[in-house]
Image 1 (cartoon, rainbow, N blue to C red):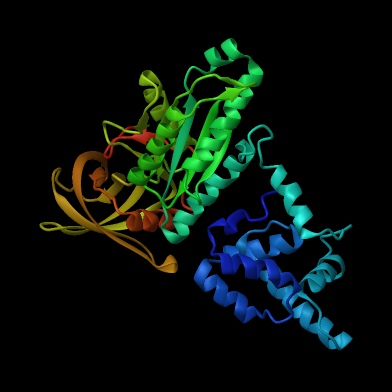
Image 2: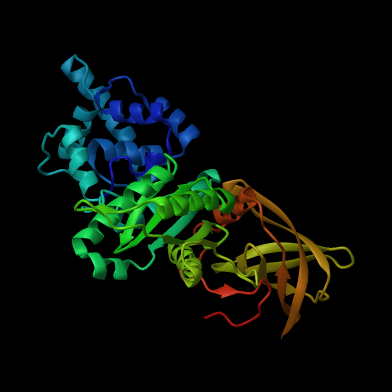
Length: 406
């Protein structure tokens, strides 16, 4: 199960309202839905189907079901001689035509929302919980792949909270956690999502933000926490400070595990000093690297040797490992283009050959170094790699490392 607003949280208010009302409409045609999908992406189909049926399907399957329901709606209207809402047609379709729902019940959407949202809220603080966090981070990553909107993650930990609990008791500690939640909510932006990650640790998801914007929010939170005093049972118990680690997607991690890990690493650095903010920093500027399930064909262009056929074995924002027919000199600057016609991706690059390894039979392994720094170019690379990634395990390597793959 997921929240009612789920993947549409990034949508505009008018679209959310339309998705909410579509269940009772009789005028939404397939053309209307296709127009919405052109603007907002195919996940509109998944969201619309989920809102009306609570069936969670991939976009392509949801689109097929929704269009089939629309045709079924037309047939019902003609047979009955009156308007039939999309929701009514959907209920009949999934019970009689494509039996998926066995025992549906009627419930007011407001009550359903309240029950669903309670599953994603922390009981003590009223913030979103870890379950929500685990579902929302992948959705933010998908928004980047579709729309190019990066985001940042803050991991926050209360300083000396155990000592506060030992001194004032656990009830006072609970009040401190509630106060912290209130300060975070007041200090974050309206569209940021504040999460109680566990214990005295919190997280803030900052959509469409880079390091600079996230650092400003983190500093605002840190200052507000420093000035705040916890009051419990009529007593002023003083203040608690917070240490914060910051990481950004996609720069600091290409999957949930690596992004959270690097935000945690930044948090550990902050805890060494306490009451401060630290952004993740890799002194070697290594990038997470994708290993490809099948080699990606390439053409390498050099000024002296012309074109060479090659195939990429793995790739990152800072370089790639590829195999080439024919030797190319180390230190040579070359041109190449990463492309996928079916997805409309064309990413021209200029790279330097950093390492050359002779594999025999006129085949050479090349370590290429380049920089894909703009969010738009990073989005293009991730779009091109969809379905080509060998596994979700991402190792960190230098931009032209030739170490053997696991």
